[in-house]
Image (cartoon, rainbow, N blue to C red; front, side, top):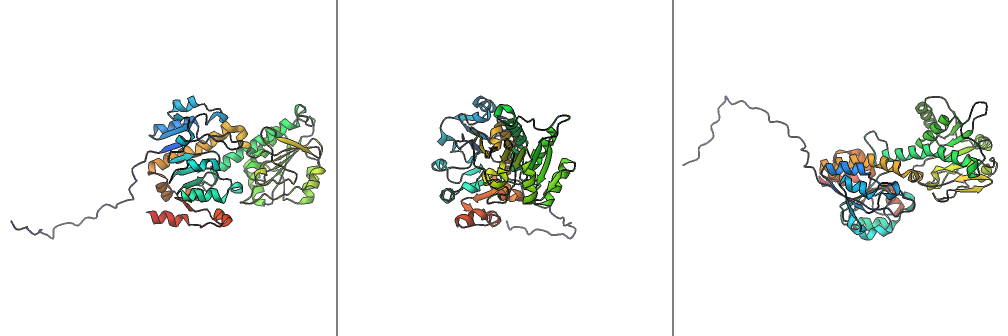
Length: 404
């Protein structure tokens, strides 16, 4: 039978088709591994049992190395009740396609890394080694550094939380070392009626500085803040809600204030590189014996010339009669709170990645996450690292676009 030709009548009405939208991919089931950290003084864990529970009820798998949460007082039992699988072998955890760590990748981890693995962890720019990066590039790893992760508002949520913890705890630490029990001066931090308030000096008006100032003011101390950015000093005053004594960092004024203070806090931030040293040894030698220096920025070199790194076990040393507290990674001393803060950022991120069908799809839609990626499938996408180690740099936006 000959095929009939279609009949076209002018009475047909031509209608537009619906617009086809970018269809959301089918969600993926994520397999997440949480190893036990062996790094020096790392007590935090990147996902709490509650967060693991949420991930598991959303259909993802979580494998945890035995006792990984111990230092933050999260027990294996809490994790297994949340649905995680506990394993005793490190290699077993590293088989997971997604690794979530609270400390940077170290040399000991390299043999366990899998091809095309995705690793969410901090990176410490100052101690990063070229060999480490090259090994990770060989294994085509995607590395997401959580201190460089941005949220939609353009802020760095994990850095912010850690800075809030460090800032708030600084005054608690200072109060402890001013008391007689710790051979301090025997001064109550703050003040009571009829006695002039304790004098606290804060260098740096970032988040650490702001939270340190809040805590000191709440205890009744008199607070003086130094920072070279007048904008940051204004922002600090607005956030705290009343006028403070502020100044740009001018050596003569600073030296005069340090001579009479009880507590000096170094909280100067830096965009990569070393923190500027603004307090010289001579200034420290003129400080009152028994006063306390807390250098929060010591992990980036510190802003007091006399600062030397100490540990949580032996946190202080004396120089010119001044108590120096120079522990890097202060939030690790408040490991449970710090773990909850990290977990609050990473858990929703992992859920979103699952819904979008993996991280590749997630970073296609969420442009703000791209700052956090320093390796993408083995290509180095962090400009600072490529310059520092003279390794090939690839633009992440081009990489992602070329994959679509």
